Length: 231
Image (spheres, rainbow, N blue to C red):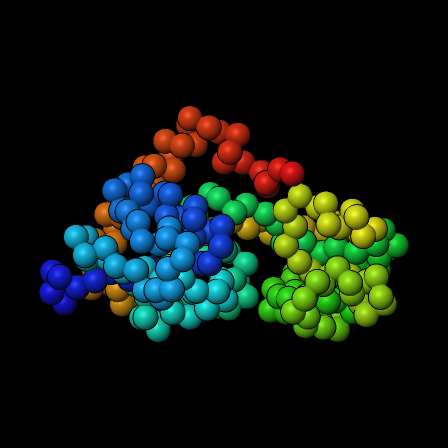
């Protein structure tokens, strides 16, 4: 591949994209056009640095990276676990911190303790199945939902839910609570396997500069690098 080949980034739409661009700008990789609110462009280009950027929904970012449509991606750990794509996970970016948890009413706690067969509503069936079948060795019926999974226990569709928890305020407002924690989550940088070989020097340079920035930030603001987001 020639020296002028573009490196392409796939960024998760929303807060993760904004936080990622802020980090990249701090290491000398700006892309001002991505901040234009009225722009209808799908791909944004930094000609000077031979870089391209595009925004995608979280579940699609690992797919773009696995198949080489993007060399580098930034996505939540939840999507990596759920999608199971063949990519290199190279860096924990430290933001977007939250937890994947089993949640439900207090009375459901006993069902979890005694490994009873229960119904689990979730947007993340792969993560839920792995947790209950492989880690807890508990048989469950998993119900895939796309909307507000908190409704599951409230309307009697499920006994518990598996979902992302940030502050827990939505749970409390609906009479639910965290019953078990599955794993911590945060934004991760991923790389296409072929790109890591073909563009090793350029990609490793970006990773190294980001790692140094994150380490410096952790030293300056240690309270921002630990725990989940606060309300």
